[in-house]
Image (cartoon, rainbow, N blue to C red):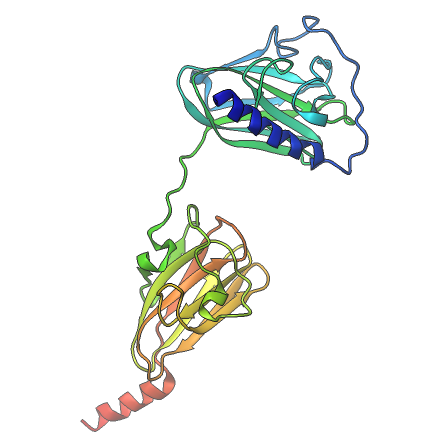
Amino acid sequence: MKKFVIALMAIMLVSGLATAGKDHGPSVIVPQQAEGESRATGDDCSDPILIGTVDIPYLDAGNTTCGRGNVYSDTDMGNYDGGEEIIYMLTLDADLDIDVSLISDTPYTGIAIFDGCPDSGILIAGIGSYLFDETLSGLSLSAGTYYIMIDTWPLPDCINSFDLAITEAAPPCETPANDTCAGALPLVMCETTIIDDMCGATNAYSPGAGGCTGYSANGLDLVYTVELIADQQLTVTGVTSFDNSIYLVSDCADPVGSCVAGADATTNGTETLVFDAGNAPGTYYLILDGYSVNEAGWEVTVDCVISTEATTFDSIKSMYR
C-alpha cells in the first residue's frame, strides 16, 4: 500500500513537472554518460555526496552541476532530468520531517528525492519550474536511505552555481481558537495587536455571509469580539502585506449575522473600518479575512474615541452637577 501511495504521489508530481515550463520549448538532452565514469564525488550514485542525520541542518553552498555529465535522463522527473546533474545520498537514522531547498543562479531547475538511485528508485517528491529556486516542504521520511538529484530542463545544460539546504521542517500549525465565531477572542480598546500570522486558520467565513457584500476576501479568517458602549466610535486599522477585508457583524451565529461595517483593501497595505455604536451598544464581532490563502502578519489598531456629541454632552452635564 505504501508503494502504491508513493507511486501515486509521484505520478501527480510528474504531471505538474511536465507542464511547469510549458513555454520553455522542446527538450534537449545532454549526451548520456555511463555511471562510474565520475570525475568527482556527486557525479552519480556510485560516489554520491553523503549526508547523515547528524549533518542536518545541512548546507552545501556554491556547488555546480556543470561538468558532471548527464548520467540519469530516464527518471520520473519528466523534462527536468535532461541536463547535467548532481547526486546526494541522504541517510536518516530515525523518522524525520524535512524541508529541502535549492537556491540557484539558473532557471528551469529541478530537484527530486528518490528511495533509490534516480534511474531505478521511486520518486517520493519532486519539483521543477522556470524559477531559480525550488523547495520540497514538509517531507515526512522514515529512517532509511534516499537519493537527492538536482538537474535541469535543458537548455540550460547545467546549473553554474547553487546552494542546497536541508532543514528540519517546522511542525504543522494548529488551528487557532478564534478561527471561528465560537472561539472569538476579545480585542482590547485603545491597543495595538500584532498578529504574527494566520498559519493553521481556515476559510470559515466570507464577507457575503454577513451581508458585507462588495468586500473581496475569501481567505483565512480570524474572529474577535469588541465591546462598545452607547455613542462609542470604533476605528479599526488593519495593516497587512496582502489584499484583505475587515468587517464587523452584529452577531456571530452560524450563519454570520448582519453586517454593520466593512473595509476592503484592493491593494496591499492599510485599510480602516469606522463604526459608531450610537444607540446600539453591545458586543460586535470583527472578522479579519485575507483575499486568498496567506500566512502573512496583521497589525491591528483599535481606537476608543467617544463621539464628539457624546463627549460634549457629558461635559455639560458634569458642569451643572
